[in-house]
Length: 293
Image (cartoon, rainbow, N blue to C red):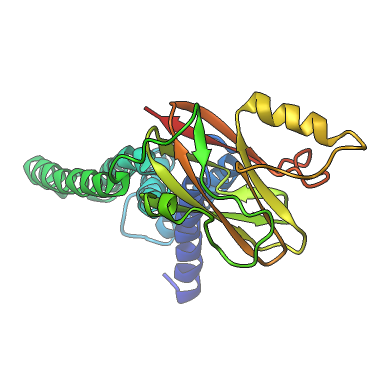
């Protein structure tokens, strides 16, 4: 295979894996844009695999393998790498995404490249040992990232211990509550009117430091509440006389600045997030936090 063809095939294959990994990182199971990104990733990977086999005159080509097991391979590698990167933000999802991706990639590689060359006993031995290692590592990472139980001073769905309205530096108004945070979630706000990540998970009873970074050129905000509360607030903000002010469940961040609030999640369920700067909520600047039991 010529150098140019090898390079192009490599770009497509690894570019496809990166697309799928990125889709997993940004809410593969809930964001429509991420599903499209994953779809393009699969197509890129299959095209790269096709270029590889097309220029390999030694191997017999099974096009069913290219499509079927190529699909498994792309999803498996994307899940594995994306799950690893996403562990700090969503350990509960990554706990099963990483092992699933490993198994899919293992099966795909065997059937595409090693079928007939590797004994079944060798495959089973390697598969069981390596899967056990991956599961143990995932469980250990999940255990560490879950942290200790959070403080007891909380309300129905959750309580924010700090919510600066305007800030250029990340800080917390309640230093004692901030010290109880078991992990930090970084939310990026930009002028495409999206939160990144828009959808993430927390555990009932944990306290999370939410760091909000505005990479855009206009002011944005990050507000937490139930769906009904946020819809009511959105309707209120449409009134001409409405004052643009929020309580301790929000942080407002100027362009290029960073803000922070510390939130204790208490009840399992789904909380919603939004930006109520004029027109931002209507443009899709919203998200969800799934609070697991």
